[in-house]
Length: 574
Image 1 (cartoon, helix red, strand yellow):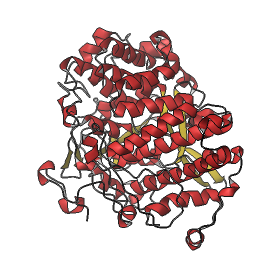
Image 2 (cartoon, rainbow, N blue to C red):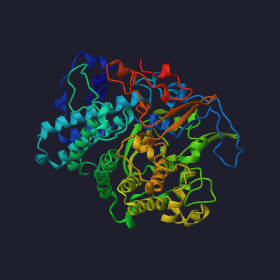
Image 3 (cartoon, one colour):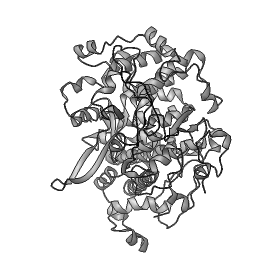
Image 4 (tube, rainbow, N blue to C red):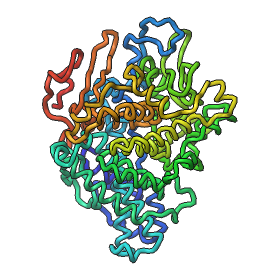
């Protein structure tokens, strides 16, 4: 299973009922005639979503995690502020986590290593292969004229195109550089965009470039949007639905700097009336009756909540990896995400919404890290007596709270600062939807423009900068003027909190051009990553490289780009 082609086919074979790798390699039976009705196409699409999660490899590559074995200060300001370190192992003792934290290729992982680059590559291209079979079946049953399709097939085709676009969107953001602009992105390697059913063994795929990959994503996205409806499912939140499709479009256009289209698609979900937008945002009042971690997780992941626009069930060990082991959200990373005073709360050391249903791992005075209950696993027992089954991680792919911050960012870049502030205030108000007693206990104050601008205008506050000139290193046309700086600081702070442990922070760091450092081990070896750094593109799994697919990174690295501690020989792609 070392060729890209077979990765994609392996998922299809599973769906189509083939029994083993050897069966597939021995023959290529034409079983497409089995998908001979709209119901079978819809059933195929139900199983066509990616089953793996990109969240762990993104989080460990971001600034949200630290190495607990490196000397660090405790996150609790009341604790003695002295350096401490541990001797913790990674989850299951796999070296992959250390490799990724050092921005190195995950050479110790395989396709079968859960939450690994290979797991993501395999799963997302397996999803692509599955939807391509669905699309072929739709063309065979209903023809290629979209207008002539039944409502069922029209919605199914829209869903399939949106899944394919989403799969490639995640792949290009994990394994390639961020989109810069139409010209500059032609110089960055993209990902293979697969649009046809594979019917030959060892087919070669070109990765193309990032600009070309995004052009194909937009093509599928726009056609899918024109077709999608919610007619095929009683519980549309577990599938691409109309609101999720618009939220996806807003995110794609945000990443490609099409600010007007971000606002257009966000308005389709949130509406233009700022007074009523709160109905589509996170409501924290539901936590009042929670007592267990599962209770809290059910509120975060509730498919009936207006805020949750689309959920994807994955097989992921994210919640197990994220705390109590070597790499976790701890120390200064934890303080910067939420364990600090803020513009609209005081008297507490933490943003109160961050501690809702969260879990901190410690023993005595030793703090091993923290994670919120929104990533708590849902365990599916296959044998309760034996206590065995599957670990599911529910991924909130799109939410209203993410979307309003994306709209606010687009308004900032259009110099609509009043409109952006309305969205920022609405978001901050949604974080205060506690009971009156809790609001008083948390000492919350009503957010206003003056309060927020004062707070986010100080570069000494967490996630704030004196200027945003680094974006121009991504693209000369990506300019954040001085008057926009406090607004972008607010977006940075709020998005970091909102997307914590959901994988999007790494994408933000990449597309904005941040510089940050990972410190590793007792000697605090420093691994620095800078704008346009080749290491922002996660290296492909070694199986894909062995099959002849182009590397995500150049064959050599400029040693001037990396500070002390980096083992260059390990970093270089052989």
